[in-house]
Image (tube, rainbow, N blue to C red; front, side, top):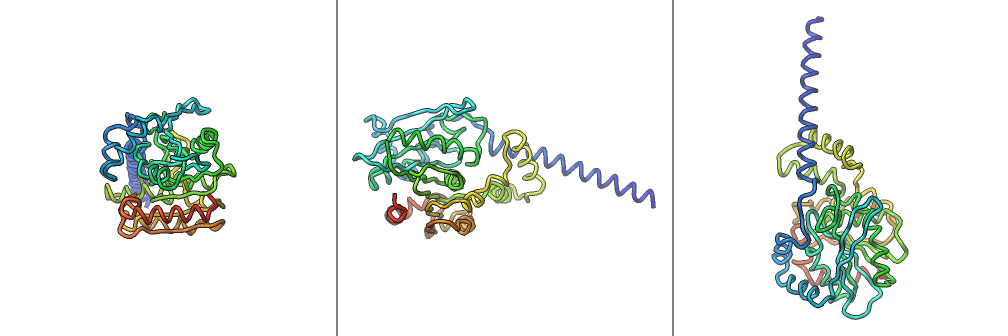
Length: 318
């Protein structure tokens, strides 16, 4: 009996050791793969090409604004000494309305050009496009998946307000920027921030990474995701479960429009509904764009997208 118990304990210890090795080793790899900063440059060729493939002709519009001095740059130094970068452009005609546009994972401001064109040229808004920390020219130790980024965007909001002397702002993000938009919505924002629009945001980082772990590597969350979240907490001060758009939206009372492509298999379409349902305070609208892949709703349905955004903002008082 004693020998049997001893063997059982040894086997259990070996298995536990293997689980820990996989959790820590796999977790380190995952954090490095998903979050550690690559060497990136503002408007690097890959991102410019991506923007042009998505919306042919958009680079000509963007580059013309830069050449004419309409699209400008600004920077900010954070309390912990990071230098952050943003681009902005005034509306065609003087406007008291500004759109804060938040890009996606490993993107930079140029990938928001199609949104900027809609707001500036069709809706009459000033546009302000930060490069998220660890993206473009913005400094940072790692990608923060919208979670800690929300605090930096909260610091950018009054900068845009001061630049444009605006009376109303809308925060509109895509993908990771959409998750960040929802995360911001749960924080206290100035009265001039009137509304939020999220396009293809995820429910939380845990479920987003769990889905990608299964899709890319065929692995379940245990033990790698647990190890990665623990390592992220140690290295960067946040865990995957706390980085929740759903929990933040539940605290939000300002108007919000939820958009998602009906054929999105990167940030799965099903994530639209828990986010929408979590908002129980204030005005809200939802639109699942028929047949659209990840962040292609604005490309596949440009006029309907614009009309829905315009109508929502009018109802929201922006």
